[in-house]
Length: 82
Length: 82
Image 1 (cartoon, helix red, strand yellow):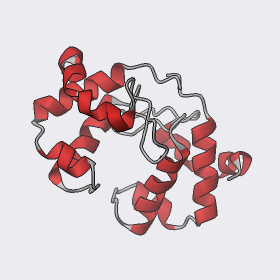
Image 2 (cartoon, chains in turn green, cyan):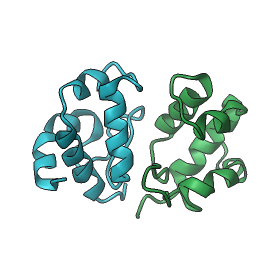
Image 3 (cartoon, chains in turn cyan, green):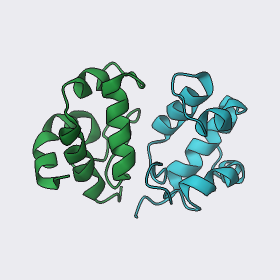
């Protein structure tokens, strides 16, 4: 897991989940400070079809396991303070 | 949504999600400071079968809409600091 690589890959996430991982949309979760393992399993669940969402399913569909670990490490490392 | 009622109903949640909504288990998400709407839709998704989890599905199965709103309000109001 590479936080710096995750930050680069996370650019597109900010539109919904906020520039610092605190969501700007009430329906969408904050990611900052979340557990890295939970973030990893959630993104994989969207990619692999156990979870379905109109935005997240296509977003996750092109991600490798390494991409997902980098993204999870990046968001987990952000401060959770609102 | 009633934060105090939510706190009472949240007793059983603490075993996995922590006494203050910060999970003690890496696989399970922190709930403290999460968006109330996201918490509500997540618990409903477990209750109604769109999301499945060995623990959360049975936990959510007996909850009313009002229970879920109270729980969501309680966890959203907890400080997100790790």
